[in-house]
Length: 273
Length: 237
Image (tube, rainbow over the protein chains, first blue to last red):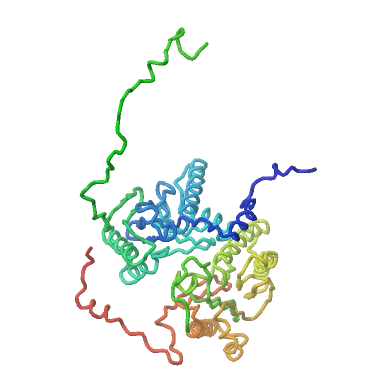
């Protein structure tokens, strides 16, 4: 039985443009860089639950493409996930698994568990053998308690009481290793996470701008968007940013379009013929 | 040594590792270090490389963290089905062969060395080594991972047939600690799992309980801890 080329299902990567891209690269065309989230993302477990933190800088090569992006992604009402690596990959993979979790919730009638999200994410990333460049810090509270996991682009996972990922992870981990203890209170935890993210923001070039925090406890969560903004825009031009109009206006005539069209009511109930 | 000191935090996770499995008169003891590295950075200093497959079979994982986790998940799943169909606990030989089949048939894509150890009522305590490539070899003791290079001579001299549980445990802890001392990719704590007819016991040996080897110095408290111990300051923003 012959199968036509268009009937073959599209699985995995589409390599159709490979030789064309290769030819252009050899001719000297620089391929577009990926939008990466340089990033510092962290998570820690405290007395009642989990606290996730992230910076808000997205870079495209040496340029800051987004000064206030959101790196803490929603997975389920009780589960959030911070993402580092290629911005498109982290966004897509967390959205995908978030949908799968919702369908699973409808199917089972129960609250999602963190290990479910973990297994779905790690299976997806392993299948793509590291080409989906998403490094994630997954945290949440379910009926079995608070959980915190790190997931690497190749699909391996770790379960830890405190974790950091991204280019600023070394700076943030230094803070955690010196000051983390078990049984922190909510305020101590938020302060420690803020301190760790700030360490990444100020010491790592790939991270910057503001601090986002997400506190998850049993039965409730708080998404503190821009909890700290230590990099405000300080220079504002006194001349303002409006530009003077250069073209002289000779005549202004405004014709409302409604006058050109006659709206006639035909019989009752409009659409029915 | 001229090396680029910036750690590539996106390098694939590999477990530098030292893993060991020994049999003794009555069961087996599995031992491992706890360091997972990405390039030159230690991604997890307290990882657990000894993974449970069934109540009576455990494995030590080395090599790529992702590959070894996936293989152990698949084998746990197959063993669970096999146990249901068989109606009794799976044997260590079956578990080891399932690992071998996955490792051998996917040898081009996987990079993982595994030591399978456990106890069953037919053969007692058994250790199977399954290195890269998917060979399976039943051995009285097995070593694996980057730190194992430093242990071949040690085991040639120190291994004895028919040790007691305590002797075997001491041997495993000593061996892992020697490897940690010499291998940069191994470190952290020493974890052991003892499996025999009575069940499974997990043990944990933090770095300060391990003996000091040649040229190693005792750890001193850092000045930060000493100064803070006298008047602890509350956390402030």
